[in-house]
Image (cartoon, rainbow, N blue to C red; front, side, top):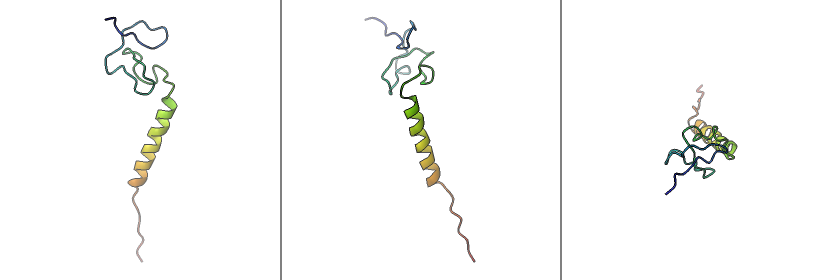
Length: 70
C-alpha cells in the first residue's frame, strides 16, 4: 500500500495519520500543513464564524445580571 501524501499543493511529504486529517475539507496533511491556516482550508472562515458565535452565546449565558434594590 502506498503512503498517503499531503494534500497541500506542491508538498511531497507523507500525511500524518489521524492528526493530519482535516474534518472540514476532508484533506490529508503532513505535520507542516495539518492546521487549517497552514493548508489554507477553504472552510476556515466558516469555522471561525461558528466558533465566534458559540463563544458569544456562551458569554451571553454567563453574563452577570445586576439587580438594583431600593
